[in-house]
Image (cartoon, rainbow, N blue to C red; front, side, top):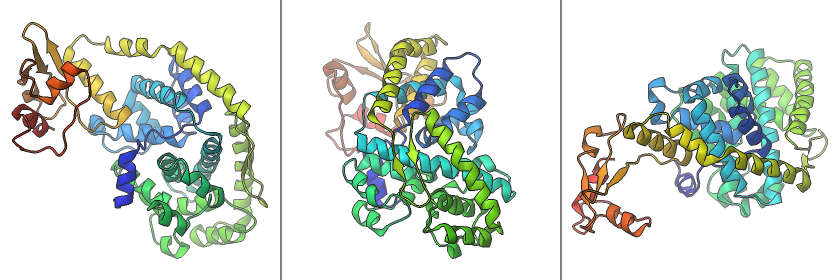
Length: 417
């Protein structure tokens, strides 16, 4: 991973990038229905880049390693289960509702969404036309092909919107000069960190390479290379894109123009259903015509839905499924990783009788038999854990090592991760 990408990804939560509010609203309504199917949930989540990347990263986390690497959205949701999908939906809705975006950023998020979903539909159609045996994987790769733009938008909320106003489509050397990384590079590096058994990361990375460079690459890479161009087609690049389609896959111009003609009304209907109005004429620049009033109406509904959902009650209901402390702790640790990206964690409970903080072991936790042997007297006052407990404040120490000033028990805790 490049230094610029590593620094940026450490500064933000790349799975907490903006979601189209109406998609969130539809998802929250769906997960509350007892008869909802995973197919229906996949259809809703599959409309949005951020939500799709969130569930994909979650399903490929260590908590679900027994299922192997997954790149099919339907299977991702089956692996996660309705309870986890519901938790993700609630958390993302709350986070989004309380982190309102300026109108300029919302305009760009919706434009990126439009291009991404167009590319996803085109990629799936191209996969079918070229006999690629995983059209749903192609759809997902198309949906993620501009993930890097959303990441950079979150990382540079003032500078990147200005850049996108004049460099929305394609790859431009100014992007790397100004932000240290191309959008397709940072997205590919993030996707690669999920360790999928798929060429999705490569497809995203090489989307702007020349036709000659991708001519002998994996089929998925060629599909996304072409779909990304077709999703941003205009009168200036149309001829080139159609010629490349013929050379890459031997597809004739009439067939491609029919496909493009079918996708356009589909996108208009989808955008309309989500309260978004996009103008994308072939002979002009793409424009977002969505008004603040339209957005406010959806955000108001989202806020009401969050209130009615009663987040605390939903969490309590999930935790009441089992009375075993270790199982409850396991749920907490899983959700901390899935929702907030914490790679590892441990839970200590306060024993009032002994005045100690006692470690709790979880079955799928590393060094499972050792955590329960840790018991720290709160009267010692040395451990950072004790200080955090007594002062009710976050505590940290960097770097972590065997320095004499670091209490022995804290060194032991660090070595268990």
